[in-house]
View 1 (tube, rainbow, N blue to C red):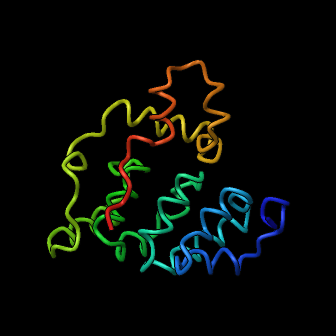
View 2: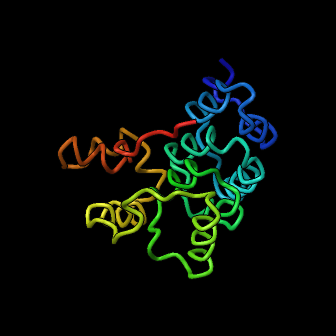
View 3: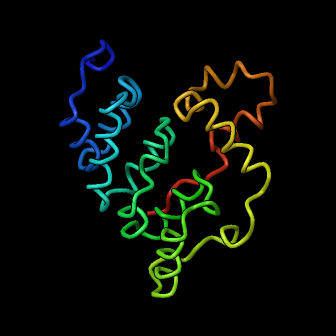
Length: 173
């Protein structure tokens, strides 16, 4: 009730919710309070990366709520994320344009068996995928996460769903 009434959500509350000990908290916070803005959003990304053990919980929620995936594109994510988490994350970025130092991390993880890439990561990204990422850059992740914004676009429902990454399956935990 407090969230619905507009209660302020402190960073400590976001940090606790990222741990996933009470799985209902983060979805409720994101539904009613949304993502924080500016420096608070960057702080949320830092705190999320500090909770890598629960990334399979918070990553889909934060990305689908409109967090810019580039805020999470840190060495910690690439080095420590579980296989499924890393594959899910890569769906939200252009993996082919990453710096060679980051691509090297993928090679090492693949060689030591801690990461098994999805087949499509081994080829050139599809044009539709690249277009979706370009729209995301121009419009912003936050806007694309809002169904009300997407419904205003003069495009078929199938494309609206695609822009909201609804074709990306959830994480298997």
